[in-house]
Length: 454
Ligand code: HEM
Image (cartoon, rainbow, N blue to C red; front, side):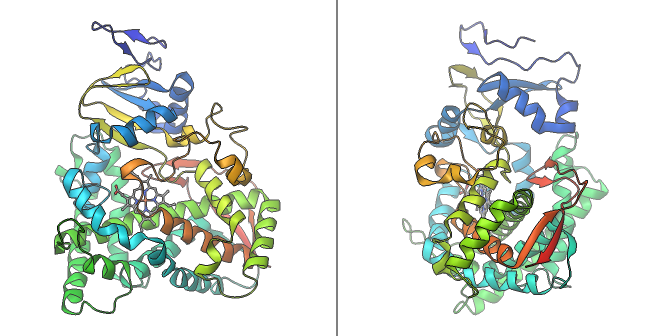
């Protein structure tokens, strides 16, 4: 296969293709190390075809192409991929999976719950859960799987801020059902069967059982709230009272169920990974950890952290931004073209899977100076303004940008400030830390970390 742009019969330039002689194309490598495969595509050009068995997909790695897809021509890049089909089994028509008018209406109703003042109201809950986690650590140095710990902590925070409920408490039916549902996603998206969820395999049956349990419990919670709608200062409470500013209608029970599960899933898995990667980076850069410690000492001292501190923790925020650059939890964004299009001067056919290679763009040598270096100062105001629009997009961009970005940053800053204030974090000698690019970017096999009190 050629690595240079080709002219097709209509005299439109087709994208270059990543060369392969393997009968299955790049599928075996995609199964082994998809990040390295997509990086190779990125190194050939901004828009490159990659063959997976008999299917061609397109990998996109330039800011101009991302702006085109995510900002200017969003309706041509639909969420009709296999990954989203699997997500729809659980999340129904929630904000992540909905499209068109349904999505627009949900987004209008949900927006106010994510404004600055609303998110500020959740800092105390975030801080209280973090304090409980810190208090539970032994007084002597200890080694923990920080990836697992952060999952538990962010799930606790998501449950409490969303519906005032501790999903990590033993016996909590939502927490238990999530444990059966979450591993099911990976096997359903990776399966080679057509529509694997229609096959009566044991993993699928377990997954669907978990989905039914979640359905029932969340529906019961919504019914209880309908009977007593006042005084619930959580996201569900806000979503139940909110109405569409254009039509005046509120969300139905089915819509609320979809949004509760959407916020739960979108809100905890991403933040958990972001926290694990940030602590990993700090363990490798103790001088930055000390600088964060000094900032927290100066801004917060020994007092409980509150919403008023968040905007003043400038370095802490930049450390989180830089961690999202090197390890974006949503490492790729998949779309399918509705109609054919031209991206960066090359033709893309209709019904083509297009992957925005966020991870590769965040480390692209053409876009970043010393791209693999951990340098929070890249996000100092004067340097941040020089980053080309679209080059950095951990929360996506355009109309489908993450609704929870402020919530996530507030949570990241709160947790980081409290953890660095209380702990020294160091890596475990000999541990090889590699990212696993599944639905989110996780540390492969967990992430052991040594924690000792300051
Ligand atoms: C570090 C943490 C997070 C990261 C990196 C992140 C990243 C993203 C990205 C990249 C998207 C776009 C996905 C796509 O269109 O393909 C997205 C969408 C979304 N995120 Fe987040 N997210 C984070 C935290 C959160 C939190 C805390 C919540 C809720 C509490 C949340 C709720 C959502 C929702 C509802 C959408 C769909 C928005 C729409 O299409 O209107 N996210 N997120």
